[in-house]
Image 1 (tube, one colour):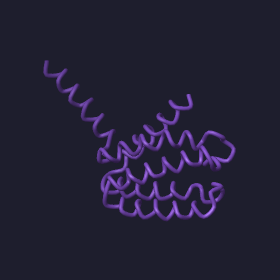
Image 2 (cartoon, rainbow, N blue to C red):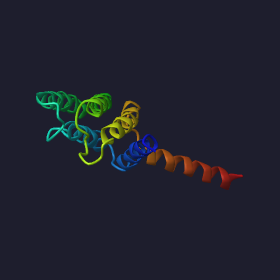
Image 3 (cartoon, rainbow, N blue to C red):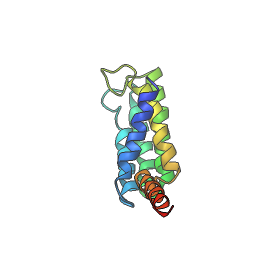
Length: 139
């Protein structure tokens, strides 16, 4: 369950973000990952490195305002930072010991979607259901 639940959270994130139309979807995701990059600032336990990471991911997220690839890179950077926190730092949710581990599983799901162009999965599903309906009414 420690692996399945974070994957499902990542998939839910993708579905919900698919409801936002382009170009706002990419920009909104860039802002989201920039915010995620600052998640450990108030107690991640890695001192000055928390600020260094936040600066790096903020820059990459800024580049993501115009590029899905940079949004995906930012999510992968956050994945790496989650792993570091799981092993050496404090968890992203202080009262949930394995929350950084879960985040490290969830974030690559989002990154893969970003690298695929952040396409709307809800539009894709609507098109698939619509094409099945039209085929069944023809025959």
